[in-house]
Length: 205
Image (cartoon, rainbow, N blue to C red; front, side, top):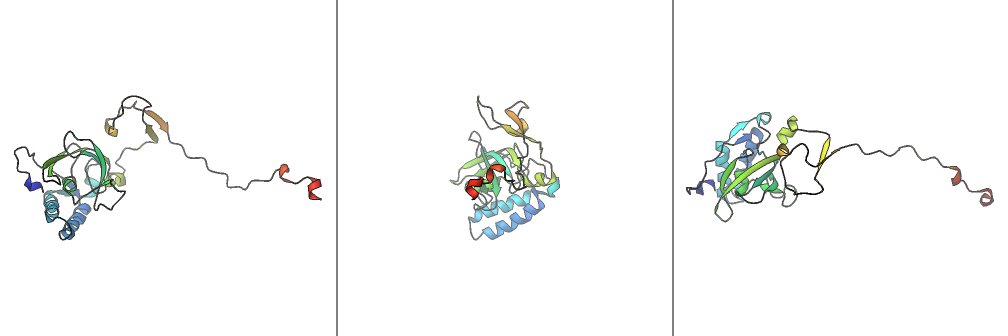
């Protein structure tokens, strides 16, 4: 799919970084898919993997799109931003929440960093450019504890213009900061009967 973009407006392919485990699984996934999906998509994925820089999971920056990463992207410059998860198959996760890696857009996303622009061919064969705006969640960074955490939940403002802003770009005073407190636990001891629970003498007779 990528090699069909020979128009003068095509941009250079950005460098991509792939974890060793993702590289091995994606190579096997593309090989198996040659008989089940469009062979050109599987070959495009294999070509992307051939030029990828392979690193161990702890050496991949947290703003790189890895498998099962949740990212904010645009299918083309100027289009509406979307948040999806890069998955192996369309059946993985809730319907409409994932981008299968064996799709024209899915082939373009692995290994990109926030801010990268990747040319690809859309389903109708036209030239398009995927733009990664933000990596909201990356499994490797989560496992290594490299994502910023804090005991606070950010709630949106009650009024004013609303727009999705990556956490790295949010000012400190946006919204209302509410500390997260543990829920009160019920008393495990059985309730003791009170005097009102005993029947009066005239009813006991």
